[in-house]
Length: 179
Image (cartoon, rainbow, N blue to C red; front, top):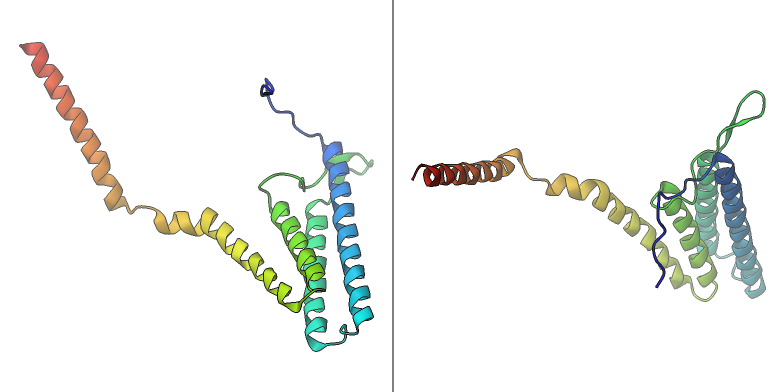
């Protein structure tokens, strides 16, 4: 068993973030291009590229891929000084729990649906996982805590009960000291 590392977790420098962001964008750009090329070649080979369903769904794929990629590129835009020195590398696309993580998940889901749709158009239904995931994240982070929070009237009796018990204990201690 490996012992956990001691000390503070290291942070990334701006130059390292910039390099990793460029590599991440390149990877997802290549993935989008490869999946789209495979999809077009297979559908051209089997002659069903010109069906209305495939045209509509491919247009949605292009919008999803394009929007997701442009959003990630915008998030990771670096800022330079007038002398050309790197001031800010932009948002770290590889940060856990960040918005870029959900955007990458959307690209992967869309690519998977696109590839699997070569086998059957029913695989496009997997795309419904995206709004389901969005609802789950919104519920977990925003809606759930908002709707499940206690009203001030419910919270105050607990505080009063705690204070009451504390006062009772103090009285008992004081009575025990007197006797």
